[in-house]
Image 1: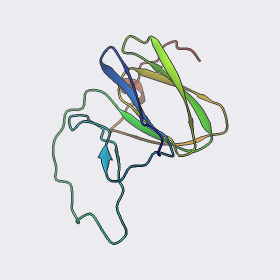
Image 2 (image 1 turned 180 degrees about the horizontal axis):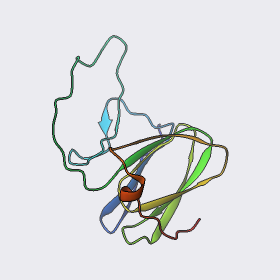
Image 3 (image 1 turned 135 degrees about the vertical axis):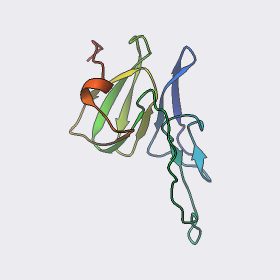
Image 4 (image 1 turned 180 degrees about the vertical axis):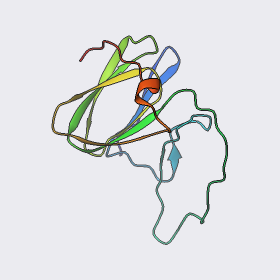
Length: 138
């Protein structure tokens, strides 16, 4: 049996989705609804199958909030999660192979070991225009 995907919500708002490294499914599964500006899926295909060649057509989108995906390549990190009012909700410890989609609210990180992360988010990105810092728990 594979590990369970952890969907963290507060007041009807989805805050984050954590996919543990030992998650598995029999086939492709999208964790996000089609209207999210960031899509996250688990894809499983059998040897000898494929995905038909394709390109992605230009399609103008309006992105209001930055959502980001982090993949832990190495190490251990605590992610502190906050609601849209910057109130602490909970934390999660992520280790090698874990994936998190940060959907809404706020977040901060405490690196418990030397850590390497891969981050994917929409662009273009501006450090000054896209980020509001606040006092959290770290």
